[in-house]
Image 1 (cartoon, rainbow, N blue to C red):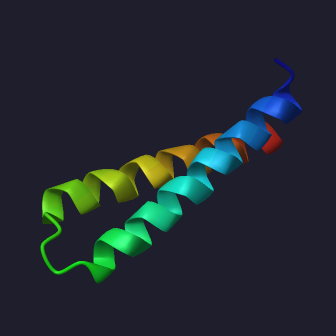
Image 2 (image 1 turned 45 degrees about the horizontal axis):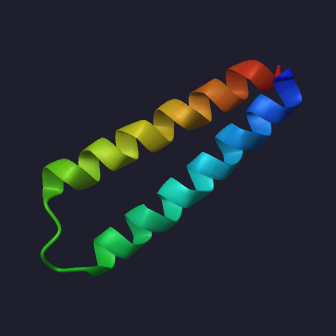
Image 3 (image 1 turned 180 degrees about the vertical axis):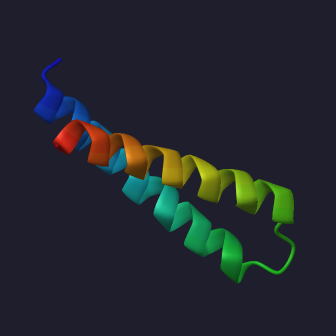
Length: 54
């Protein structure tokens, strides 16, 4: 897998997770711990994308 295709896959995962976070925030019964873990993973993906893009 090339770096460009890996970055593209990470971006897709980041967007999917971003959509899931938005949906979870709109639901009143969402567990705060679950939401925090999702946001942490989203940030980890973003940092990896940034690292690989430079």
